[in-house]
Image (tube, rainbow, N blue to C red):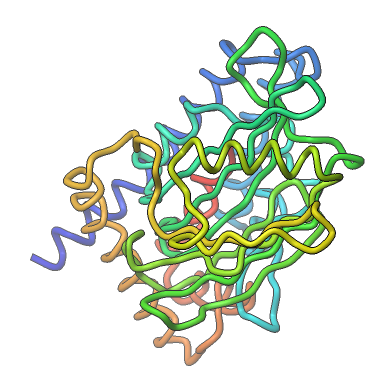
Length: 315
């Protein structure tokens, strides 16, 4: 039985890579924006996937390098909390946000709660989205800010001048996993080797510093329209009238996948986490650093598919 599950899990990683490519192709063809040329986008999308698979395969001259894989995928390791976080210059920034991405999360082994919060500011539509859940072999959470491309349903990642200082603490069943804070367009944190159901995770003390009171008020209107309230969601407006603190426990928006389908996929992600933790134990490591990933690969080359942990987050 275990052998069958292992085989299924490894096969699923390959399916995830295929789904990621399909998602990228669809996005580039259907939702390309003036700032993201079709030819450049297609080259980046397939080139990025090729680069990750090449790094994952490794050769005697150029051995497996998980740090390089993470960097190509737009992530870096934060040793103080033993987590992976997003780089500001991640190539995902070129792709912005589209509801298609949330719809394709489950096939790429991401079992997550997603909460898109659109709001108006300065005559334009912005969106702050929250995510939390299981990302392949990692438990994690995200906050991103995007601006709608006129005449489309696609959102572009904001530019450097529009980035916000955002922070949150991720908890599992009341126990803190990590803290994150950055002036960014996409603040994230991912803890490898941890299995979680989305409803076990809460994003506490979410703090966002907006540009001014008008932007804060626009976001507040978006929150209230979704059904958030001051008491249950611990909404507090800062004394400067341009910052907010609140929490994300359960999504108010309709999710693209049913709890049943998420539960089915969690069978796979739980097995992937088990495989990873056994492999980590076999090389005598307790951390999730790139060095640990490299040791795992050296001992069992088949586990190069662990690079799929980032593959689902490429787009």
